[in-house]
Length: 361
Image (cartoon, rainbow, N blue to C red; front, side, top):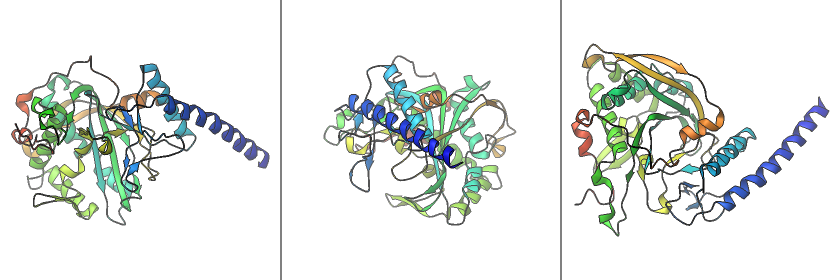
């Protein structure tokens, strides 16, 4: 046993050396000066600098010359995770990308991760998952016969928040949306959000539906919200314009920060790639499952969300999982998916103000 263990360790060390050199070379060869580069390490709020590690360079921004270059990076990302040294890497929003939602719930001490995951997105027939699917299908009824979702999770103990955290990314590969982009304070005419940032509108539509659905006493969503209040301890997550937002409020759980593209290089936003981690967290984002929702059945508003036929789809190979979760991958030649804008919740459009220019004309 001792000989086997020593051999195993030496083999792993050799693989790590070779992999480390290849990874460093990739990042060294793909540095980009532009703050609009598709990949970055993100700004570390603890050090007020870009995150640094054994493979990083001071520039902090990276791109690629071809999709083959990008696939090479995906393989390096997967191999780093297999060698138990996951990279930290953020994919910034391309002008167009698949619809996604970033869902987080921070629990109070003593609440288990499993309990919180069951309340959020662990089970495809859970109330929250069905509510999100129903909201998306209101706007994209052409997928009533089959709406696919890729589920990723990084649930675990958050070292930054010192609390258990349920964390999921939901990616809908059939639906292509455009990004919401903040403008520069120095050039308010640069704001792109007067042309209907579709992703943001869909997110607010989901939040509005959840708010309405949980207002019916005794409804599935009302009961879920009460349970979320207990699990999270209902601590204050944010305060803005005199309003207090609790950690379990729908607009806090379904985070809109990754939806806003930040032109300021020190405020990079987006989604981390699958199989990567956050700085000093130890919670890599891993694939969970793929599902297809079809044939919704509902008996009325108080019974919302409807029930679905839910099929589990085949798992993907690791590189394809990374590809599915990469919102920086260029899709400029792909048309936005046609939608039923008339079904959009009226309040959703009223929320579309750029946080910088506040919608100034």
